[in-house]
Image (cartoon, rainbow, N blue to C red):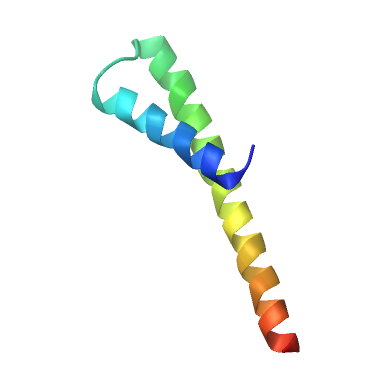
Length: 59
């Protein structure tokens, strides 16, 4: 899943949480999913930032 898809999935989870669309059991699972998505997004952003810095240093 790419960054944009991950972000969209995270936004969907957050919106459903705000609208109380999850039962208590599902809420726990969705929160775990959201935290995993956030971790993946941070890793992708850090990797991209590092790659951009390397490119800029070479030029």
